[in-house]
Length: 131
Ligand SMILES: Cc1cc2nc3c(=O)[nH]c(=O)nc-3n(C[C@H](O)[C@H](O)[C@H](O)COP(=O)(O)O)c2cc1C
Image 1 (cartoon, rainbow, N blue to C red):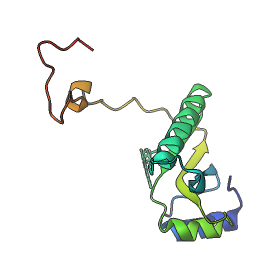
Image 2 (cartoon, rainbow, N blue to C red; image 1 turned 90 degrees about the horizontal axis):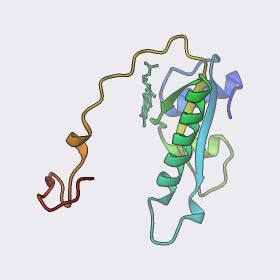
Image 3 (cartoon, helix red, strand yellow; image 1 turned 30 degrees about the horizontal axis):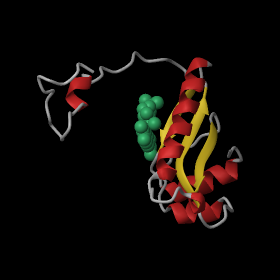
């Protein structure tokens, strides 16, 4: 968690984004990549994504807004800046705060646009069970 003004300015320089202000609490989500599951070099991203999604759901339930900041610049520079040991990998920065307004949810693409059966762009076969 990062809320010190000087640390926020340093963080802005590292990630190359000028949007960090003191109205938010910042949480830098990191993962210990030295403990990756054997055979899965995506385990870090997968686990972190699930943890972040859980946090988003809880925050939403509590009426708290979260802005995702995935553009982190050089993550090795960022890791060293927060004194994290080698192997700890920054994944995403969360800006957490009370939203000034709750806009209407944007129009979602229909699930059928993104769901493929068997192969990419595969269509539901006549003998498939209706999912
Ligand atoms: C995975 C992911 C990464 C994102 N990374 C950034 C980012 O680096 N910088 C940024 O300004 N917005 C980023 N966004 C978008 C913001 O989180 C936010 O959704 C967007 O700015 C709209 O919110 P706003 O209207 O309050 O700005 C990202 C969104 C997602 C889903």
